[in-house]
Picture 1 (cartoon, rainbow, N blue to C red):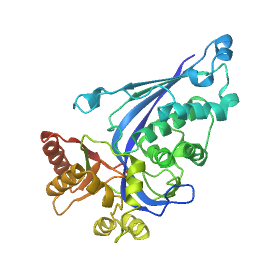
Picture 2: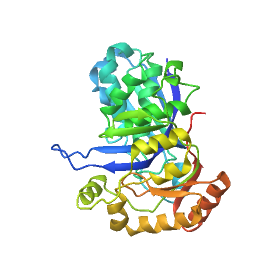
Picture 3: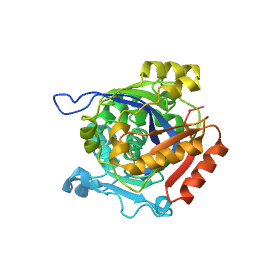
Picture 4: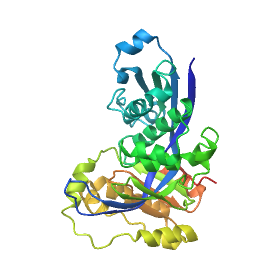
Length: 336
């Protein structure tokens, strides 16, 4: 019998991002405050049975099928290639990891085949954790479909095996999927769409979500995260975010305090290495005005603006789209 569930995964922006010197293993420690926004993909996961002979004859990974619908992104003329359908897609790896962890609990005959259909609305390779969110959605989906009754802490632990942003996405997306996820996850204090990530980003502490209209936009370029971090290592940092102060400002609803600590140190490199990002940021600052704030997210190339109203966000998005930028508007995810 086929069982299906659809989970919404959401784009992530960094309200702040501080980066330390590389460790002995080459990884950079980070201290970042992340916020999900209500622009998201739909991740439909189905499980069904196959014959025992087919089950024994195949590598487990070959029983995972991923398809991606890029119609919404292609409509804007910004996407030309499909995403991988194999292990090159982090959603595939998430399903494979769940099969490795819970083969017996899931039942070899009950659910040996997994179909993942992703409807993409989050720009690809944009530093918005779109892939990480898709992977987190698969973890949640299989937890439900296989009746595993995992806690959010257990899901986030598996998420950390997949990538830096996946644990936060797994925690944050609960607020946007209340109708389909278990009540114990909805009630979990970790389930906030805003959080502070430390270490490699996988050590997540929930924070009060920030409520704002938002616009995200990106130039038609890509940025290598590894190259950005290498370039940043040569930069001199004169100002870093105080994330303790940012957490306090979020809790107090202090807009000025939040804006004051919205610093992304990777801008020091990315805005110089890719002038298109600086051009876009300057243009968005013009649209945002004194009541808004504009910042690059992650290592780029996406830039986002927090704006005073939904109407201001709609005007900003329309102006950017008319100029050829890839732009979307919405609101931050609050869970309220």
